[in-house]
Length: 102
Image (cartoon, rainbow, N blue to C red; front, side, top):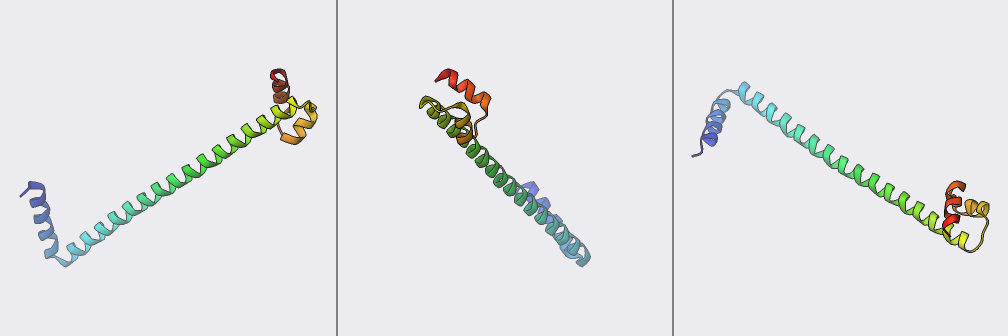
């Protein structure tokens, strides 16, 4: 038998002889299980929060890309910078930069 398993078996036998020692042992085991459970829950919660943040950032990036494309299209159709700004929400400085490339 593996020495670590044999040691654990001896410790278990010793602890189980005394009611107070067994109760203390069981309390420690429960505390350890509770701690592991809390850590697993926190880890899962962290993953979910990270996923939500990533999705939000992706949506924002897509919305910005879409607004810029709409601004380019509007400028190509000859709309004024002010009207493009009002329609797309893209700032005037960016529109001026886009207008130089259209």
